[in-house]
Image 1 (tube, rainbow, N blue to C red):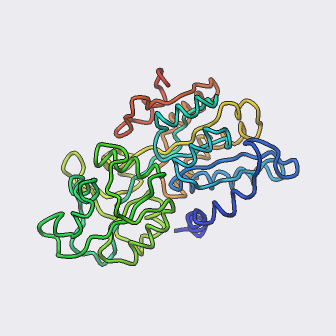
Image 2: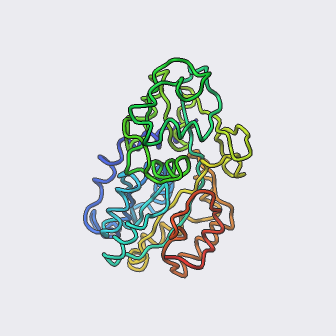
Image 3: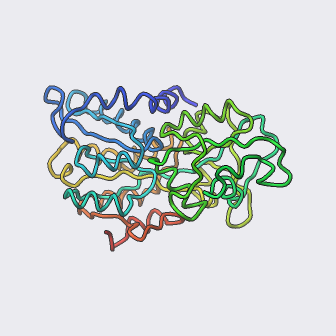
Length: 344
């Protein structure tokens, strides 16, 4: 793993305290001595992608524009976005109905832009020698609301598992990863036991699992790739009954299901209309030659070239709303959601 990626992933823990302090006032403003600023906040999962784009964008426009990137979690980012405090909101799940209503109430129109694919990764301690492949039904047994204070031992999950305490780590409730995992595994977004160690910072999950042989956790693929010497990624039984591990290849091919997913950036239309910095940044982010390199560098899966082209068309034509108005987010193809004519 490159030192550059190492620094980007570790930067999540420092982003809220250091990066966000760089910008004040309204999004797309001239905070900071006349330098036009792009303000981004949201998902810790998407942070490495946006931080990589921001770094290259600022190098290319040195002294002209700057980008501030916060990490409030997907839900926290949308709260700021729908209040008009940020220009872009990065998210590891689609915008929810209540968030759309908040945006509408404040006159915030947005464009939904998939920027990468992720393989949501289930991890255990490297010394865990009793499980290599897990079924979605077993993840449900561990994580469903009914498991709280009831499923506390590995032996309760599968008869062949040892009599060992089960310790769980995962994203907090403001995380889009939490929402996606609960929908994919429990078929009910937000349905989860509450007695686990939760954090919006994925590095907390990394530390917890790396230091406890009885632990299990989950997060985006980039955080496993950065910590693969400290963690063991489980294969997951897919809909065809095959045990498939998380990787760039399995996420792109679609065989790592149901835990492969798109990652998003939401652009505020008023910022695109009023700020040259925001327009330039979004164009830079969606460049079909540059974007795949940066996305792959930070451990995620680039979109097909056609998807970046469709995303640019959506920006140019100001196609607002979401392709997920019916709430579905598991198993939807990138091109289908970008082509969706009925957006709300």
